[in-house]
Length: 435
Image (cartoon, rainbow, N blue to C red; front, side, top):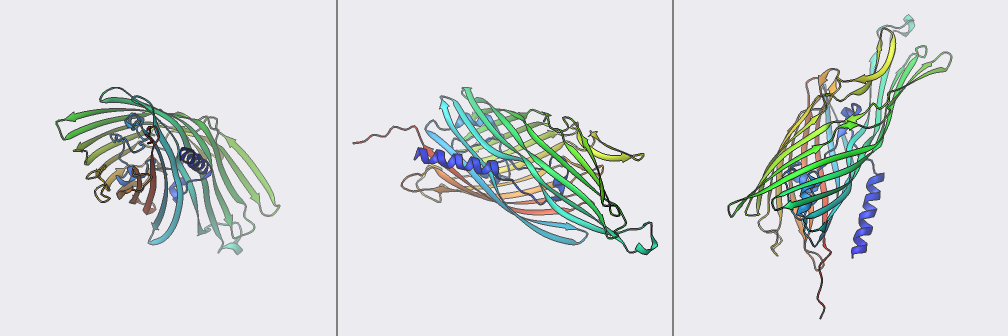
């Protein structure tokens, strides 16, 4: 059984490494793309609540200090997928798009007393869009082309993934700290093609590419305090290190002369032009009789000083250079709840987890000098116990999320996302007595 679990885990890791998380959002054409929801399936049932969450039967990689809570006889493997339907609305027009993605694969186990180890693969950003717009040309060199039009076609794909190895240690009762050391890798390709219905007009296309191969470090702390017989409060703090990614993004500008069929290509490169921000997370969770858990999280991503390469033309001189006015600090607040009457009961209904959450987030992007869309999201979910003759500790986590992104003058997005995750909880290190 243990060999089977390891094989399944390694297979899932390979699938995750080769799978590209998807999105259809046109907002992914900016910055590093759309920031991924990095929570596991049980986190997403509470709309991402994580920093103060501390349980022995779940992998809470959003705060590595929580690894120290894993049961000494347990190996936990957790993998999740998501399916989503998004409605885009602009100027009264609506379009729907669908996605289904393999999201993450993680595992944790106890290495020694008060020391938990975790590892896994998860998404960091997503890039994926394809759309075009056509407009009439106001001025052309020939009066015979007065009805000519031009079309701008925008496409993009790619994203960044993270593989991590982490540890959480509880040096003394009630206090834990942890560390995730991650490897970021991935790439993105974005293109803008400008074409005309008149064959005598030159066309211009721009292609942006970048490859990422860098590190990521996240620190976490949790303090666990018992207040009387029935109440417990956990405080959590995380800090993600901001730094340059060592990537050299490129911009390729191609001008095609329709009369001579000659293409003029210019390549621009910005050395060490991508970075990730410093991230701070604060959270608290109140637990009542080990049944009801209610928590609040706050996250700050300090994008404001992060530079990003931008192509521009000033005084007929094209440039591709770093700009520190493309981002703004992102703030996110989350409220979540989890209720389970008795997780050790033999009764199926009594062992069910009922979850819910709501969050509000400001954007990290600026679009044409204006802040991008703000985000409001709501979730509800269940933790369904798996009970059979071989295992009665595993959980099937299912949740639904509604996410709305909106900003004045920009596209509105309404997304319904179904998250499904399986937490396989195997008793590894127990000694069995044979008569």
